[in-house]
Image (cartoon, rainbow, N blue to C red; front, side, top):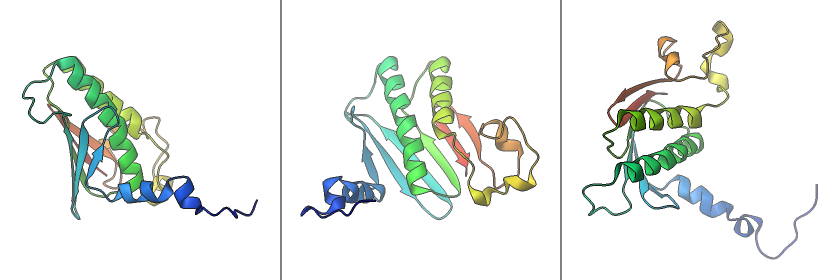
Length: 158
């Protein structure tokens, strides 16, 4: 361990205060364009992926797919930082191709995998190989994660 004795405060030097402030913001800008808007209540979290250009009515399927993939990773990051509870609804940019919708769903599932929280009561449950898979987890107790998909929107019980 070493004493930090520089004139610039430690949190300023490494941008920690800015990152803490970002956690509370409703709109999270993505570096490649577009944003995620997060509205949180006691029982519900609504997350909307928005286009880089709001005036654009149609977006090429590939561009929408790529933006949704980036958004899935950022949504998982935001969920880890904010630790919300209740139902989480994600509204991705619309895509027509079923393969692309499933790809975004898989990207979100993979990005959200994590170690279980201590309060999830996994010690009382039998060991299952699908424990970290939110889709197959829907059959478990209500404290576990589950996911339902409809079009380009996903709903999670967290």
